[in-house]
Image (cartoon, rainbow, N blue to C red):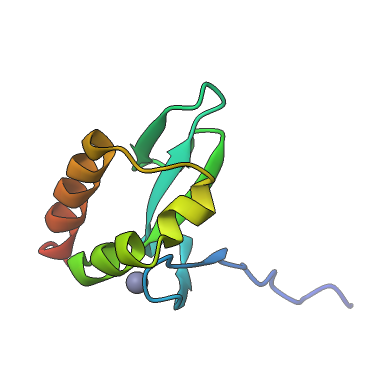
Length: 97
Ligand SMILES: [Zn+2]
């Protein structure tokens, strides 16, 4: 008779490195430092490595750069290439929803 409880699906939450607000992982953009030490924007959330999460919001991106939240989360200095790509991705997603 028991065991009728539906499994509660737990959505993983991550906090944005810019505004520090916790959100569903799927609503954030992931930046990852690969085991080779490269930085990339990981849109599928599948790359292995150390990751940081940020809202698709240019304000958050600016905050994260200013307060070094991204650097801290990733443990490295951001390079310009990544920043350009990240800015593009943030802008792309910002206007979607
Ligand atoms: Zn944010």
